[in-house]
Length: 249
Image (tube, rainbow, N blue to C red; front, side, top):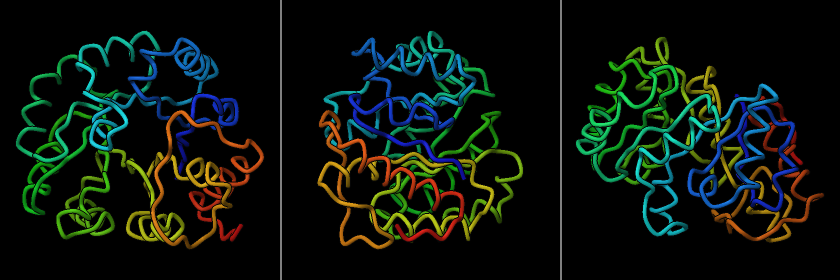
């Protein structure tokens, strides 16, 4: 599984050689340096996904979502490999409506769709319908925990449904107990293409080495610089876990 680290803009140089990236649309719009960094990643032949920013609105890091046509414009200027299609974290029905409205604005091979729902049945129905589109990738968020299920159970269901035979799978975010969650998700489906997470930088911001078991989830403070040495340690450890290696840090 590939790892796309989310780090503060001040620390972008620490992920220059990673090869798999998640760029945040609102930062692409507000920072020429941030945009140029990911433009260079494209020029180097690395894989770049542009996130639509909905999760950042939900977490309070951004006040309001960027209009999706602007997300597409930025992704096209960048030449991004993939774009997270518009979604509604609280509604599978609204997520499907948004996809139908904007599907024609992004080539199917560049689309990542993300199912949602207020219940497990709604999430499954949304995932089932999105899997029948021509989108290349299905993103699995942490929202399943909120509705009485888990991402591991969601992955097992996607395997049973056969979605993994026709779409790439990407995990959107890892937070609490990263080693435990990574191992469990890979056990459920070893073919997961990748995951994005700011957990390595979030722990480094607090002066912590990322260990296999952590006590509680911590959130990345988006604009707070990180000690580069500690960040590198945590990034290396996350990368090893994503590759299925047994490093304990």
